[in-house]
Length: 443
Ligand code: GLV
Ligand code: MN
Ligand code: MN
Image (cartoon, rainbow, N blue to C red; front, top):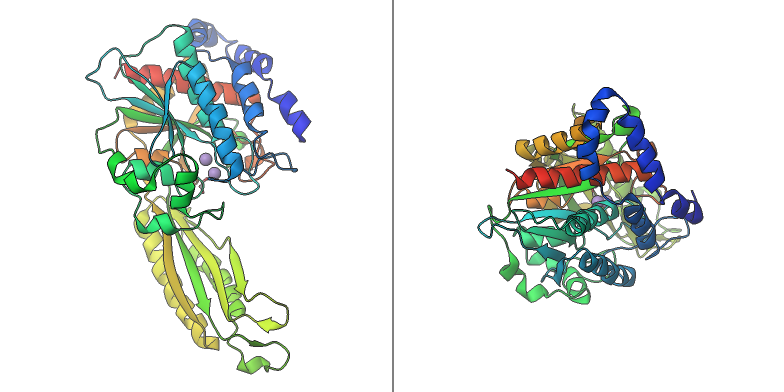
C-alpha cells in the first residue's frame, strides 16, 4: 500500500460504522447497540489523525522512520500535544520527556486511571505501532470531554518517550531506569541523556519523578497485535494475558586485526567468523527447548570494516524474550558457555554489556474483565493471548493493575513500513478502550 492509499484507507468512519452494523446485526447485537453507541469514539477523527501523524518522518516505503529523540520525533510531539489540548487535557512534559495530558476526576481521593502508548518508531517502522494507542487514548479523552462526562478518577493520557529503545520513558516513571543506561546510545545517535534533554526533559531529575506501587488506579494500552493470531483466528480483539520479559546485550567479540591477503586461513583470529558462529548458535540454543521463547542477533558491526582487513573486533546485539524471566537467564547462561567454546576455536573472546531489561508482566484479572465486558457490549469477539512484543504497559504493571487491548495486524506484519491495521479495527480498539476506561472507573 502506498502513502496515498494509506491516507484514503484511513478515512475509516464509514467502514467502521458498516463493520459495527454487521457485527451488531443479530438479536444479541441489537440489544448491545444502544450501549455501543454511547461508547463510540469518532472513527474518522481517529483515523484522520493517524494519517496526519504518519507524515512526520514518513519514509519512502510508506511507513515512518521516527526514532526517539530524532528531529522527526521532536516535530511530531507538539502535534500530539495540540490534540491533547483539544481533548480538554492539561498538557505537560515530565523529566523523562513523556507527554502527559491530565483531567481531574470528581473524587480527588482516587488515584488516576492512566492510558496511552508511544509515537516513536523503530528505524523504517510503520504507521500504527504506538500511534494507534496514543491517538485512541486522546480520542477517548476528547469524546468524554465532548459529552461533558467527568469520571470519578482523574485521567492521565500519556505518550511515552523512547518506547522502542527499551521503554525508557515508562521505566523512568516506574523507577527501573538505571543511571548507567543514560549513557547508552539511542537509535538517534544521541545518548539517552542527550535525547531526553532534546525533547524537553531533564535527565538530572529523573529520581524526582519516580512513582511507586499504588500510585495509579490502573493502566490501559491499546496496540496493534504485531503478530498474525487475531487475523488467522478471525478474532476482533485480543486481551493480553501477559507481556514477555526482554533482555538485550551488546556483545563485543575481540580477535586480531590483520591483513586479509597475507594471513593464512589457519592463523586468523577472525572476530567476524566468531560472530557468524555466535549468530547460528543463538538460534540453535533458543530452539533447543520447548516453548515460545525467541532470541535474535539484530545488529552487527565489524571493525575496522574493510574488504581487505580481517576484523579485529565485532560488536553485535543479543536479545532474548520469554514470559518467564528465569528462562531468559538460563538461555543466556547456555549462550555464554557455547560462545566461550566458539572463541576457543580461533582465539577470540566474547564480552557482554547489558543494554536493558524489561521484566515480564502479567495483566490484571480485573482489567482483563473490564476489557472483555467492553468488547462484549460492542459485540466483538475476543481471545486471551500473550504479547511477544514489549510495551510500556509492563513498566506500568509495577505501579498498578494493567490491561492491554490488541487489534489485528494484517498479515501479522509489524516493525516494517508494511505494517497495516484496518481502519474499522482501529475504531473497534478505541471503542473497547473507551468501554474499559468507563468500566475501570466504576471499580
Ligand atoms: C517493542 O516494540 C519491542 O517489542 O521491541
Ligand atoms: Mn509499540
Ligand atoms: Mn514496536
